[in-house]
Length: 478
Image (cartoon, rainbow, N blue to C red; front, side, top):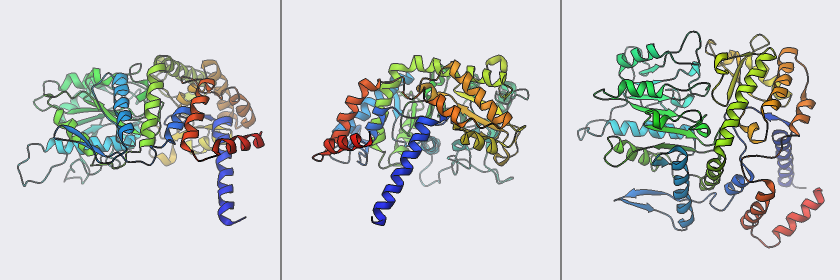
């Protein structure tokens, strides 16, 4: 066998082993991931994957620069409708291909918007000052100067650092904002952009508080909410567009059911004072940040949006119930759970635990992974560095879709406690437990989905004899 064939065979073997482990043997508790449904995956590999559909508004008309795009144009319009229904908004920009890109698109749009009245020939200025969540207090990398905010905010000449002020937090609960101090800092600094949203996300953000505070300012800031982690919980957790946020961003593959993409959404009616900002955001999406906006995953996002709009009420309620039950069970089994016990420790899909008593977060996360429990280590608010993390961050969203409920998270919490506290080997027990949760919920059942998926698969690989060869090989595997 040639080296080429050997490498293919070796890679296929590793893919199968990884699929088996991640999909059938382990519990994935990483809060920023999910497994898409069968039909969402089928959409991802369909013909639009690898195609182009560049388009922009020119003289009031949407102009496409490629032929063969009628289908994907219809898809994009329908995704827009489905997501506007989900958020209760009028405008969605779908072309960012990640949540971080969505944030950068907004930052670029903000710079153009702030320079809208700039005299001809004058250099463009950056944002004067931005307020956001501290990275060490749960803020996301993409809204930091070292992330997507890079190059879009001015520096303080005295310090050489960007003019970014972090939201203050309560001493007794650093996962919640200190509203009194926040009001003082807002008045002192008068930011041009306020960025809400976190990656370590347990409680609501003070959107309404800030919106009320700034509503009568002569030049009020734009209020942005990065909902990447809680996008699929929009409504049951928080409705920032109703609370005063101007724009929301997010990724579509954490608590939302979609493939890996990003989006920007809001309400920007013609005549609105922020209508120009929305036009700038769209122009920074294309041609400012993307050319090919990954049409396979765009089609998949439409399928995921169907699923979310159909099942969101049941799914969202189960996710929040599972998270609170999971946190409670971990606490009862001797694990220190972060957050306020009176609030059930969490209002989202996330549960954060403190494990430094038993080892660094990195060490505990590896020990859990060796026992088929996949998490990620997390620096807690009092840690000096991510390299010496005291915490583990977990999310219940993916396993909730596979049918895991409150009583099952109680069993899983016991196994987690045995790994962390007693350093026990529970790998086989976890594997046996996972065997009970292999079929995805909150989507079409397999009985309904497989006939549709098989037709799509046959059309994707349409060469003669494909189906016969596929069935022949499946029989051999059996």
